Image 1 (spheres, rainbow, N blue to C red):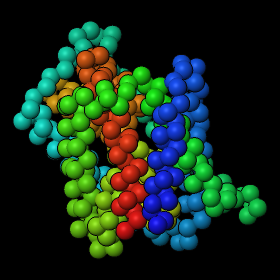
Image 2 (image 1 turned 135 degrees about the vertical axis):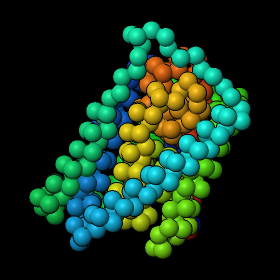
Image 3 (image 1 turned 90 degrees about the vertical axis):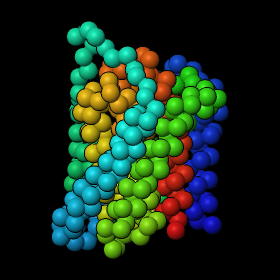
Length: 302
């Protein structure tokens, strides 16, 4: 019953946001609001992490979990999509002019990590009365999903257009299955990780703000931080990986960022593969943004 309630709390704001008529000014406001909200969420995650007893003795274990999970989920996802590119080739027109050469920027990702660090520091100095309420994360989760729904509607693409992009749909299925296999491998390696937890952790697909909240609620701040840094590493990796393989493995390049293919990594996808690859990235990213919260909630319920 609790998992059903959580799923409703996740999906209802998404569909309400998607049902709101799009407007350019509203879309701009939502984009700015999402940026600020993500910073707030990451800071609160840092505060929760600071309240974990004996955290210092678990840092090495957390680093091991993050490293293994990142290698397995990113690796299996890329393997599946690169195999798809070889079996069913699809070539994007790459940019020829030097002025369009993609520039890698990790500034945004670094700021996100800094927010967690700031929150961690605040958690040690704030008095008990100023600590966030237990339901704060749930409320922020609903607001986040609601704004994402508005943003998806404001992208100008309909669900029909997404589903009619056959390669985008195929990519999303291959990526999802491949990454979940990585989650099962992660669970097989660590005896304290159940198959359902491995699948839940893998289901973030790069959506770090959402996965951190859901995993913290389900498994505690330690596993929430593992999910957070696993998905942030995917973001870092995608920024470096996309320009290198776009010519020969466009599906793998587009899919490397997972859910971020719809927003954060979309500019570098466009720069590396030109406008012809943008519809594919939007279709893939849209579907992953819909699938990720559903799978995380379902798997974490077991």
